[in-house]
Structures are given as structure tokens and as C-alpha cells.
Image 1 (tube, protein in one colour):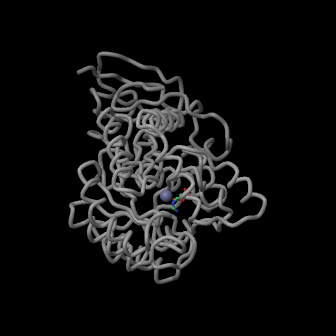
Image 2 (cartoon, protein in one colour):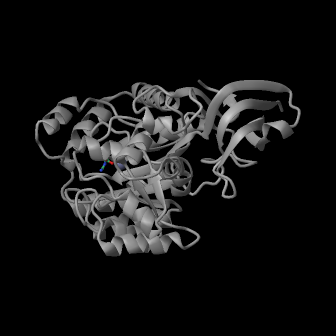
Image 3 (spheres, helix red, strand yellow):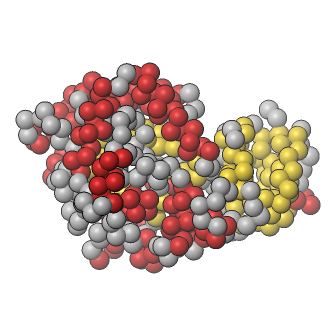
Length: 393
Ligand SMILES: N=CN[C@@H](CCC(=O)O)C(=O)O
Ligand SMILES: [Zn+2]
């Protein structure tokens, strides 16, 4: 294995508890892992050297919530929303029709292109959901092609979201839930690690969501929930009660919801509150109360929610800038939520930090100071991206 010594690092965001940011530091990669970090003056010898010429280095972003497996276009719906129409879950059907109509090679190419776009912005660990197939065959196809991309190292995690919307052809919601929790789950389970459900107005009730999640757990999957996006609709309570790894959106929270998330953060397997600021802006929804959640002691992740309906961006830099500028997070809190927080939401400890033994996933900024992520919003700050020890940008 080749060891690479990186020097000339102005700020090294290892995100280790003792000292999250090192100044004047160096870093050694050994193959696909971090082998050493510390003061540049004490750096060990290595096979190769890379001089980063005074740039800041962060762990690559961990984007724990996206919906990349889709075809079609919803720009007209977005434009209508910007002209005053409300967001409704029903738009999912439009993307479902287009996704079903796409060939498998086309769909695979679309997902791979979106993953490459994410990498260009510094994302090195990427989850995607299914959820625009909504038949046994179409959900199985979405899950299988995403799993193939995990095998090829393009994606990292796949989540089954058959319970995204009751599709037009279903007789009723209850019979569709039977399908999702039965034959659809059986077909998809070999390809995925997680099961998710959209528990909200116009989608699934907490009772229906619970049925899907319990079936997923019985099939060996970890649990995730889209909750409290459109109202106080019970998703957070359900996610915490069932021990889901994360509940995402969390725009509308009662004090009890916040306390439940904070209590869960005191356990070994917290339910992470994943906030999705790009989605909040693109649906003109109230920003999720990330500050209130952190102050209460909850674990918070930041993710892009890249999807054609509510958040057509995979820019984690944009999410970090919004979290700082609009949600009241400090730079360190926002970076932590977009790296360690995402990793915790995926129940992983190999990504989202630069401790020894972590996956060598680096985001080198074209600036000495990470604060530029918020200070210079919208600027192209990604200079290099390393994934599993190899430079990919
Ligand atoms: N909220 C549910 N699902 C997606 C939106 C999907 C769509 O509108 O196509 C989300 O996370 O925002
Ligand atoms: Zn989503």
C-alpha cells in the first residue's frame, strides 16, 4: 500500500473530540485509510508527498438523505410554487410516472451523473432512497441499480422508500401498505440496508408508517423516517419509539418532540434529527429548528435531500452555508452536522471524521479558512476531493 503525506494544511478538521481542528498540521493516508494526523513538524516519512499550499482540509461531506433514482422533470411545478402554490406530496406521482418509463441503463446513468455532481461539491459518502417506482418491479429495479452502484463505489447506502406515496393505481392506502410491507419489501430487501417511510399529511399515517417500519425491521433493515415536514404529524414520536436511526425534515416540532429527540441522544443508538435546509428554502417552509434541537441536546445531521420535487441540489456546501447564515449554527456545528452527524444518522463510524483508521475521504478547500463556506456563500470552494485514499477531483 502507498502511504501519502499531505503537508501545507492551514486547518485540519479531524473532528476528534480532544481537538477538532489542528493548525499547521499534516496528514498521512495509507491506502484507503487515515494513518496519522498531527503537527507538520512531527510528520513521519511516506512514499509520496502532496503539498496543499496552505489550504483547509475537512472530512468529505456525508450526505445521509437523497432521492437520486429518478427520471423526468418538475421544474414547472417548482416555478408554480415560487409563484405562490403550496408544496403537496402528490408531485411524487409525476416523477414516479417518468421513472417507470425510463430504461434501466438510462436510470443508472442519471443516478451516476448525480453522484458525480455530488462528489464535485465535496461529498464522499452518499445515501440514496428508492421511492419513485412504487410497484414491486419498479422498486426492486431502483434498489438493484442503486446497490450495483454501491458495489461499483459510486454510492454508499441504499434505502427502500416504497412508502413514499400511495400510487394512483392502488385501490386504497391500506392495500398499498400491505403490498409495501409484504411482497415489495421481500423483493427489495436483498439490495438495501434501510427502510424509510414518508409519515406526513398526504402520504402515510403514523399507524401505516409503523406497520411498514416493523415489517422492515423484521426483514433485517434499519429504520429511517420522513417526519414532521408538513405538520406535527407524529413522525418524530414514531421514529424515536421505534429506535429509527434518523428522522428527517423535522420542520414542525412540539416541545415533546424535541425532548424525545434529546432523550434519545443520551442513548447509545440515538435517533438523529436530520435537517434539510435546501428543501426548506425550495418549498418556502419554515426552516427546521436546528438551533433549538442542538440547544436541547439532540443529535443533528445536515443533508441535501437531493430530489426533483423539493430540493434539486446535492450541494452540501449550500446546506452548510444556510445552516450558519439562517439556522443559527456556528461553523463548527454546521460542519459537524454535515459530516459526523450524517455518519451517525447512517450509524457509521468509518466516515465523517479524520481520526486514525477512518476512510481517507478528504475535502480540500481552495482557501485557508473553512469559515469561507459561510463567509463567501455560493463561491466554488471545493479544490480537491479524495475518496477512499484516491483523488477523485
Ligand atoms: N418528503 C418526501 N419526499 C421528498 C420529496 C419528494 C418529491 O416531492 O418528489 C422529500 O424528502 O422532500
Ligand atoms: Zn426525502
